[in-house]
Image: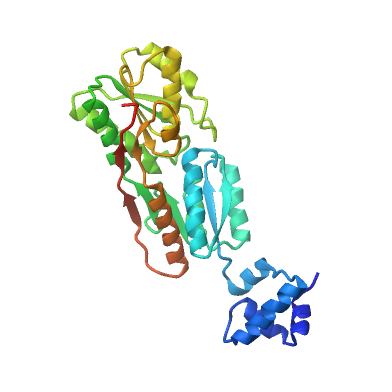
Amino acid sequence: MPNLRDVAKQAGLSVNTVSRVLNNRGYISEKTKEKVYRVMKEMNYQPNEMARALFRKKSNMIGLIIPTISHPFFAELTSYLEYYADLKGYKLLLCNSNRNVAKEVEYIEMLKKNQVDAIIMGSAVLDVQHYLNLDLPVVSFDRIISKEIPVVTSNNLEGGRLAARLLIGKGCLHPVYIYRGIDGPQHHLMLAVQRREGYEAEMERSGLQPLHLQLDAEGGNYTGSNTGITAYLQEHPEIDGVFASSDVIATDVIHACNLLGKHIPSQVRIVGYDDVQIASLISPRLSTIRQPVQEMSEAIIKLAVQQIEGETVTMVNTFPVTVVERGTT
């Protein structure tokens, strides 16, 4: 396996000159650069990226911690984050925490050891102090950590209101909000809880009683809610509308209605949240509140890079949501 000295000897240059070429440090003529890269290719020399990162104090890697890649929303978010990171010359290190505190702590230590330039925090379980003491740029998704850490979110409060208005406007008198519980003392920091607040406010404004069904957190498992939802709809046959806190939960509601023989939308109208791809693939196609995940992803990467480069950033970055009406309403 050739090393840096072998490349320098073959190119007829000093080790220092070859090192400067690899790390883009100081002035090097294009002729010299081309010679070094040609010899590297001929010798099949692969630079030690970790060593280069230590030398430059920059790895061009960004860590991403999410609850689970299996959830369609986080899968879509990750895809866009990788795309925009690549445009900026960065690679993502994906950490799938499965909403496990110990696992998240281990991932943070791993990201520090790998000299990442920034961390995108999309999980919800770890105490905020772990992120405040990192001494490197952090961008939070949908969760308030501190006034010093920027957050990207959608207008969850307005999203709850829009969903309630849609159901009420369709004549629903007994709609229910179905959401998955978030365990632990950090749940109040999650901005997604504002969806419930918006829903409740609109229900009360219209003189209706806000109804709720909280599903178990179930760790990182985001499927298999049919049983609880089916039982609830059986116990409450008057339910004529559902606002689900995610499109995934909304699909479980559709399945439950099918099992019970409840026609959608004449007997039960359903609104989801996110507008991930699954919303357009199921039957009937799902009405939902759209988060602009692509624009949010671009903003997250932009905030990370701005901090890496020492620029001032906007701390709270809230994106508007919109109603996408399809066959379930």
